[in-house]
Length: 189
Image (cartoon, rainbow, N blue to C red; front, side, top):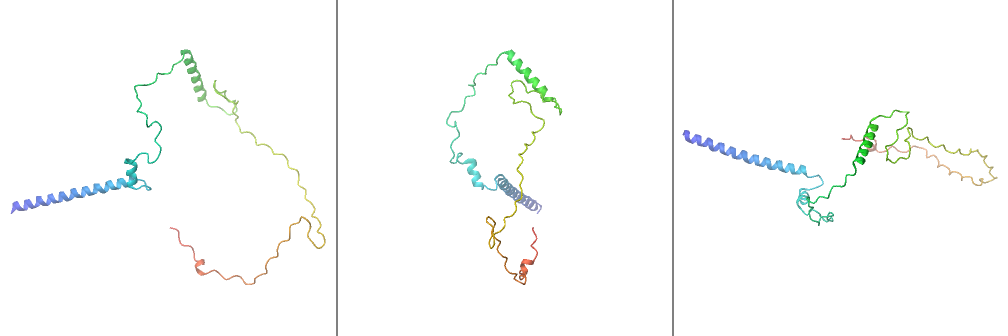
């Protein structure tokens, strides 16, 4: 009996291992689905993502310029440009060093702004303050005019028409609104 009990235990363990492997495969498949859902934007479906990744690349758009040309040969590099005279390179280096040291010195308020480096186009000095606002020309004074006297039995020429009369007082106030309009608004969630 001990052999049968041992075999039963081994078979039971094998079944448990098989179920665990199945559960692990299902878990991996679900994880892959969740990852796929996370990679695809909210506006795209997985099918649209698959089309964009592996479908026709241009999707009705014109091809990029130079797509018909062969791949460039990297062994055919153009020659380097001429370096120029050593004295020109030294002069350029000195000018760049001077401009660097000048840019590292802070400008204190009230001092004139240093001149721009040689070769830079400038319209003049940079002002420390913005220009003052322009003054407006004085407007002529407005004098009140005396109202024209109205002719007897009519309105003055150029005068606005008389305002219409207000309706008569209705007497009692209007009825209150229905009860559903008087209830407090529902809470915002």
